[in-house]
Image (cartoon, rainbow, N blue to C red):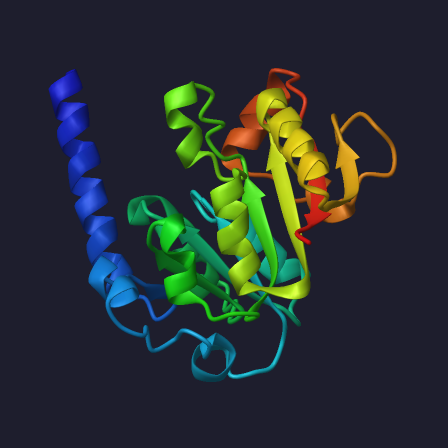
Length: 232
């Protein structure tokens, strides 16, 4: 098959997934103006309007294929999970799996992460997971780094006062950058590990749930790091 044919097949698959997402009850795709110019209906009402319970609300930012969102939802049925990514064709797999397996405590949201405070109300979120984000190593890309000062301020707005943050990454740069920033700002680093699969005592939720790309990293014996912290 030629590269052009492969590209056409990929485009058709994306369109098919976009259309399927529109039919999924667990997928939300608000327009940007809905989150910037007016109050989004689910803002402050995720538990009441979608999950129909008062359980803790947990977000996964940059959820990709949704493996972690689904894995956490299975592991913690008494918590609600929302996977967030701008690429709906990616999280289509996680959303479909959640529906097929009757996982009612997992939802998916297609939006940009910088709009997070337009989707969730102040103190609405209990925990946030950031899994394998692009480290944005180049200086000009610093503003897109998901643990920079500006993003931490956004997370603080929606998190409860004692809300937990989790960073799991294959990037030593991202791990070191985040640790340095957290210590410099006086935030509480509760746990930090440079190689969760080689050192004892790693949290089970960190090692027992793996993404597609994480499996590839592990096959190459690449270290996976993890930080748990609170934003003061």
